[in-house]
Image 1 (cartoon, rainbow, N blue to C red):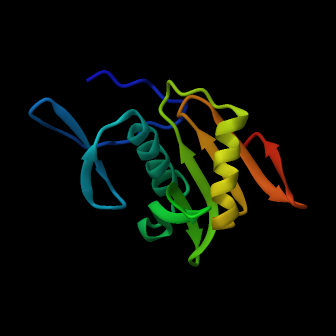
Image 2: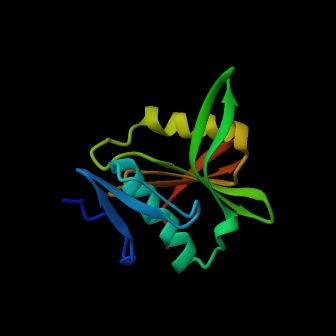
Image 3: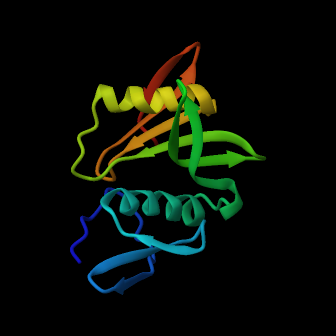
Length: 143
């Protein structure tokens, strides 16, 4: 199993298992093994980041939250909450997916339903951070 090294300063302790020819990664939030897809690899890095580096509890992280957008059911990859209020919406793409204006707009549309203060669009190699202020997104580089 060859996984790309993602753009995180920290290294995380992931648990893997193999069943037949498929690999699975343990999700600390859902407390189960999930099929290890490129997108899941990115999401698990963010989950570990918020749990270990930022010291959030697992109950503050919501994965694959269903939302209704223009009559269609969509899923948010990861939502970070504080006191049940949405704070950071994280949209994860596979490492080989280019982050474009179009993919950012998708994330912003999801956030029009969620209402988080901040959004992160990531493919694990590149991260685009923005917060919502004065009815527009302001991009920034995290410290």
